[in-house]
Structure formats: structure tokens, C-alpha cells
Length: 118
Image 1 (cartoon, rainbow, N blue to C red):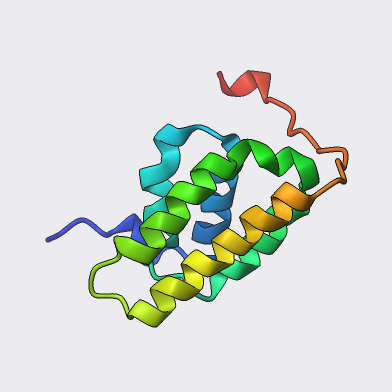
Image 2 (cartoon, one colour):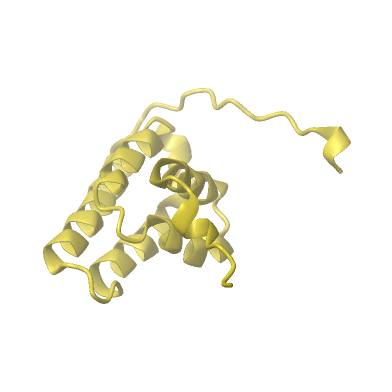
């Protein structure tokens, strides 16, 4: 019997939010995982970009990753409708432009580290 697939069982909303959290981390080593979590989420991508915009100027740190993701959405999703690939890529590129124009720097809420979990 095959092992259940985590990716197939997890609701797409938490998967999308997990991808956004990884993107906000700014670590480029997470890009393959981010792209996997957002694969085929053409409806969620614009919603996630709106959430990212709430970080204002702080989001500038992830712009190189956003460019990589936009390129991947537009060129690397085999067996996915081309118009939806373009839609996702355009959503990310519009977000990049909005982040570049952003002048607000809201206070970011930091999650407290649980010292007992180590």
C-alpha cells in the first residue's frame, strides 16, 4: 500500500499560506518548495500577493525570489494552461512593482520562539 501524500491531503489554503511564510523568510533555498506549494494555485496566487503587500517596504527583501517565482510560473509549469501561467506570473510582477513603489513600513509582528521546543 502506498504511503499517503501530504501534498494531496492538505487543504490548499494552508499550503498557500505555508508558501507565503517560506517566501517571507527570504531564504532562496526554499524556492523549489515554494513553487511546489503554489503549483496550480492560480486563484490563490493573487490573494497571497495581497497579503505580502501588507508588509510594505519590508517585502523588498523577497523581491529577487518573487522574480524567480514569476519566471517559473510563466515558463516552467508543464501541462498547465498557458493563460493561467501568464496570469500567475503577471500577479507576481504587479506585486513587485507595488513593493518597489511602497513607502510604508508597518511594524512587523515577530513570533516568539518556543524555548521548550528545542
